[in-house]
Image (cartoon, rainbow, N blue to C red):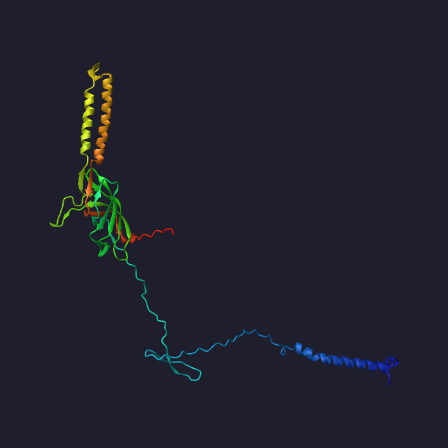
Length: 329
């Protein structure tokens, strides 16, 4: 049977063609029906996937139990293992040791001190003379200075100050700045403490145990050495000649409101005498001042006892050890 164009245009051919088209449509619908059913059914719809946290597993080395040391102080403990539920082993003594301390740290003890107005007994190291300007005083502490059961200044420490002449009282006055220097064998050796005070005379007789009248008076007493004998003679001669030149001048009488008066005459002789008298008066004044200044000096012997009266609080916390001076290489 041949399918020609005439057959397709015939009624039979058209029936066959329509049947073939219908069969093809049925097959296409049957093929698409399962896919549509799966997409439209809510029961078959896939549930959304849940994002779970990632888990990373790391394999570590198993802790090895140290080998027990056989010591009498070791204790027996139970260590669980994989093979048996309980096993006995001796734990070693760890090298770490813990100590319990106090809850509060101890407060540092304050430095020793002494209140205002302490008397430090001292003794001069060498002789002192007032003919030197600002004579240095070096003394040694002879007795410990205590306060509240604590020693503030030890015996043997040095005291350094300056002395000046007191001509009115014929003494050596020493006041102002002093410095105490520790000269001991302990850790305080070389420590310095600046203080303010003045020197007082100490008059004590160790043989009789009696205190003298000048004990505690200001200044240091000593031997008064007079050196102005020749100057005193010169002063006497200059004063005498100055007065004599005024008496030897020629006088003349003058009359005034108060009556008659005598005045020096204007002569060459009177001029020479007046000039000489003025020079002698000036020389006499210079001698008088020199005698008052250098007419004597005071010599305080070595080993003279005196007090250092401190006019401030003695605080050991203010003492410092001076830093050594750096020298160039």
